[in-house]
Image 1 (cartoon, one colour):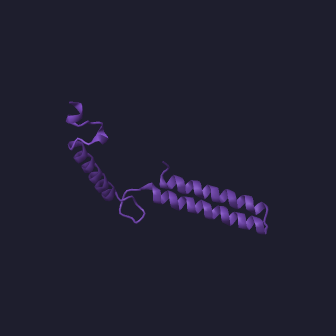
Image 2: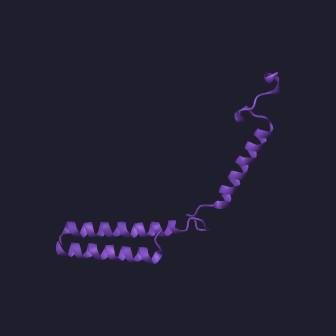
Image 3: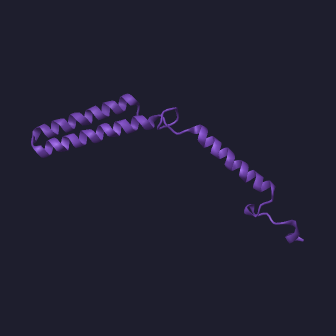
Length: 98
């Protein structure tokens, strides 16, 4: 994974390349293309910054407390079913074995 400073330098370099390329052909289409590419590059940078640390307390972060609680409930259900000799685990009743 790229560090924040590395990504920032990469985006800055790409922006300069786009600006230099568009300066050579200055027309309405090039201006629109330049703005579109720059918006996309800065959008990608913003998304990368959000996804860099997915576990935390921000609104967009993965809520690990909720994930762990859901997993605890699911494992509890599976263990209760297993203890009750559920057929979903390939167990057979003692009467049918007889």
